[in-house]
Amino acid sequence: MAEVNNEKLNIRLHVYDEEIQVAIKRSDEELYRKAAKLITDRYNAYAQAYNGRKGEHTIALMTLIDIALMYEREHGKNDTAPYDGILEKLTSEIEEALKDK
Image 1: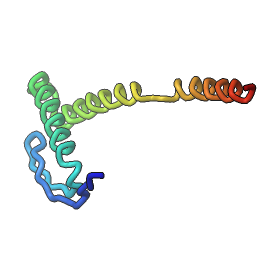
Image 2: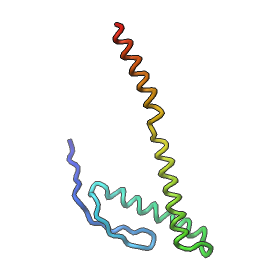
Image 3: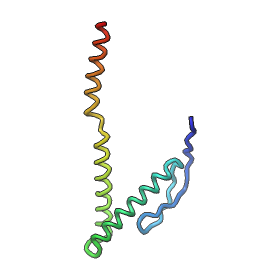
Image 4: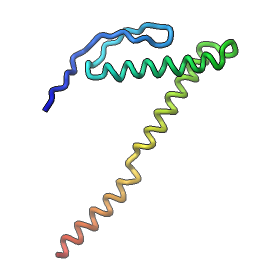
């Protein structure tokens, strides 16, 4: 089994117009870099669309809502609760059928 390297790594992330230094698990570096790029890309899209009409704070909040909405949509797709009941019912039916034999 491959050994996962979870040593801490100090990296600098470029997020919109700032450099942010963070200490992360080495195995999470790619995810952090992708997250920083997503934030930057979404912020830039809103900044371009609302240039001069909205302040930086509002644009940042719009960016957060956009990303949170993406997260919630994905999270909803991964909800296994509807399937848990079906699996429990099927399992009990299989167990009953096996007991009868």
